[in-house]
Amino acid sequence: LAAAMGKIRPIMVKGHERALTMIKYNREGDLLFSCSKDHVPSCWYSENGERVGTYHGHCGTVWCLDVNFDSTKLLTGSADNMCKLWEVSTGECLHSWKHTAPVRCVGFALGDKKFLTVLDNIMGNVPTVFVWDLELDNLAEHPDCPLLTILGHTGKIGRALWGPLNECIFSVSDDTTLRVWNPTTGEQEHIIECHNKKITDVQFSWDQTLFVTSCTDQFVRLFRTKTLELLHAFNSERPLNSASISPLPHCPYFIAGGGQDAMSVTTTSAQQGKFETIFFDYAFGDELGCIAGHFGPVNTLSFAPHGRSYTSGGEDGYIRIHHLPEDYFDAFEKKASEAYGRELSSKK
Image (cartoon, rainbow, N blue to C red; front, side):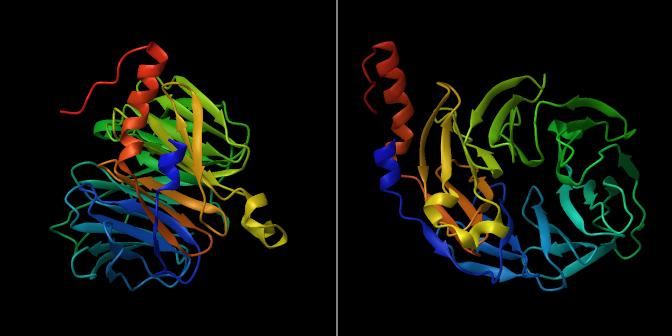
């Protein structure tokens, strides 16, 4: 696999003026959405990195975004205390929801009937997850008060996600806990306390049976969604900002990225900062290799839904789209065949 990684020639996309905060593929994997500290979320073709369009309206850092099931609507949350709903194809802002502090995370529920937002714990606010009704055919008279307010975290909430079939909400925080909430009552159903420092990201696998967390304690952890059982914990030897799971069953890998804190980057070289994206094999439980390229910490990672590419966004303002070579897809089968002394099955 190390040889395959050497063949990867990333597409470098310089479309943002400041550090990337989040990147996300749509469900089909043909579009890539990105947001950064430069106030303007963008949409790109994931195949070649060509810009499709931009969404103008925020006047602060855009921390997060989410695209709905059929790629028609986009939600963004920003440091200007606004959550905005956009028409993907035209860039028109359809509605804005005002908050009392920066919006750290947004997410459509399956079916587009609800969405969640996360409130930052500054300016006298406590870290909060809000659940809102979403009436796409009644936006002119849309109620501007949340359906549900979820409280419980004692530190800034970094990420919140709807669980499978909207049956729960997962959230991770600077208070080192991962919590699972009931989206109807707002009650806490579970809490995981195996992290030692702030949790920076949580992402589900494509079928939502697994999820992965990245943490500044340098560990990336893989959990089973249904039982919340910790399956693997890998030491990456660097503070982590993001992690993502490959959607392909014959490539049981996940990636993690981060690096030395952005504030102290100017004092060290790229080699010492450890700004590579690392690949881990969770079937055999080992580290596979890494792909370098960014000049600063990797802030956000996402595997494409088809599993043939992944994208990273860095503090350096670059989006790097990596299309994976053929050797990558055969590597696990080769490894498994060697481990069990079997002949490698020939391709039909």
